[in-house]
Every structure is written in structure tokens, then in C-alpha cells.
Amino acid sequence: MALSWEEKRPAGDANKLWRNVACDSDGSVILAGAEYTRLWLSTDSGANWTEPRPAGNADKGWYSVACDSDGSVLMAGIGGGRLYISTDSGANWTEKQPAGAADKNWYGLACDSDGSVMLAAAMNTRLWLSTDSGANWTEPRPAGDVNRSWDCVACDSDGSVLFAGVTSTSNGRLWLSTDSGANWVEKRPAGDVNREWRYVACDSDGSVLMAAVSPGRLYISTDSGANWTEKQPAGAADKSWFGACCSSDGSIMMIGGTGRLYISTDTGANWSEVRPAGDVNKDWFGLACDSDCSIAVADVYSGRLYLGTEAAASPSTFMSPMRGMW
Image 1 (tube, rainbow, N blue to C red):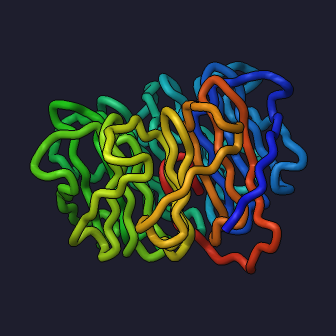
Image 2 (spheres, rainbow, N blue to C red):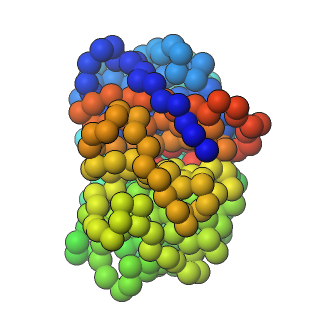
Image 3 (cartoon, one colour):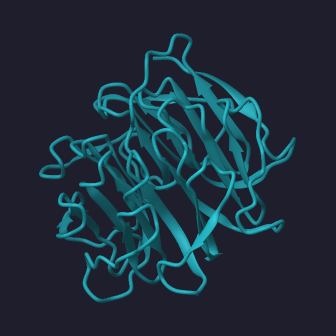
């Protein structure tokens, strides 16, 4: 497939510290957050943008965003701040306090297709789960009753498969639940070693999983985490991976980090380089796509936001949410 890319300017003709982006199943609703500035929302596939203000008229470090399949449920988290949720397509927002009335570094957010199941990850603390659209929260403890630097989360379309990663050279592991968070199993794509897991993603039923290390390698499972294969989009070299997304069936994947952006149309078997910003290296921090990857969004840390569209997009169905995704 070939995507045609154009630069979008939610914040005007200026570089921003774009951290993450999310979109709904047909790519019409796009939510993008930047560090030390604002949050932007489009409901017409990036043609026009508005600035929702969950935290008021103030610059904040928007580190993570997520949305459900139709864009009615939106999540946005601040680094060193609070977590906010909208259930009316961004018209109104409510502060949620999974960890109590305290600022946290919300680095990872995910929700299922209707926004009822939510997973929120915070650095140097805990993981939180809601099954009622954020009204109430419980603390699953994949790694036990200890603080961890939870950095990335993902869940499938019905919230039964939950995937979470810790970024740490001392205790960085991956954890997977296939029963809506009741039980968790540690997964070891890279072996029994600590890694800085920076991004996880999954398809709509949780059978295809992606996990990326920064700096390190990309790992993919096509059997719900039972077995893993190392993939090399950029060749046999460690890379700083920061963003990933996949289509609802896991066949189309995108991954980016410090350097270039890559796409696969055969579940990671082969990769090609795409160049939204031209033949230059960039820090690709946020990636999102609709259900069939006919619409994709990629943002650059200390750079711009880009929208990719396929000439003839096929009908869309839901794609599972992931960190900085919907």
C-alpha cells in the first residue's frame, strides 16, 4: 500500500514537542498532544482542529492520549499532572484520580472499542484499570506490590487482552493478561533480561502483539504472545523505537523512532521506509492509524504532525487501542 503524506498544523506553522497521537476506527477523529503546550482535536480527519482544554487555559505536558472506536471516549494524560477523560467527543472533560489526588507521570493510556475498559500507566508508580469508563479504578499488580516505571500499555477491542511494559534497565519487563486483568504472565521476547520497553501494541483480538525496546529491537508475536520473533525494520541494529501502530487484523504495521519511519504490509515479515518529512532523520514519537491503515498519523518530537492517506480506502472496522492510540 502507498500513503500520501501531508503536514498538518494544529498548533500553527511551528515545531512542537509532539508526544503522542490517537485516532478512531475510521480516522475521522484525531487527538494529538504536545509537551509543555496544548492538546488538539480534529473530527474531520485533520482538515480542521480545535483546542480542547481539559486542564484549563494553560500549557501542560500532554504525554499520552487514547480514544475509542468512534471517538466519543477520549483520554489524555499529563506528565507530572492529572488524567482527564471525555465521554462526549471532547466537549466536556473530567479529571480522574486512579492514584488519588496527586500528580503522576501518565505515560501510557489505552481503552477498548467502546471506552468502557481503560488501562492507565504511570512512571515510577503503578498500573490502573477501569471497567466502567473511568468511574472506578482498581490497581492490577502484574509485577507485585511494587512501584515500576510503567511506560506503555495496549488492549484489544473488548478489553480482555491487556499488555503493559516497564522501561527500566533494572526491572524492565513485559506483562500480558488474557482475562481482563485478573491474571498476568511475564513475557520475554528478548529473553530473561531487563529491557527498556517503550512501546506495545496489539490488534483487535490480541493475537498479534508488538513490543519495542529503546534502544533495542522490535519483537512481534502472532499467537497471542506464546512465541516471539525479532524483526529488523532498520536492519540488524539497535534503534530507539518510540511509536508503533497496527491495523485491526495486525497485517499492516508501522513503527518509528529516532531516525526513520517504517511500514510492513505482511505482519512484519518485510518492511519499507516511508518519508512523511522527506529524506531526513526525525524523532518519530507518536503513531496511529485507522482500522485498515488507509489513514495514518505520525508526529515528530520537536517537529511537525503528518497525515497519510491511501487513495482508495476500504471500509473500516475497529482497531484495538494502544499507548498514545485509540
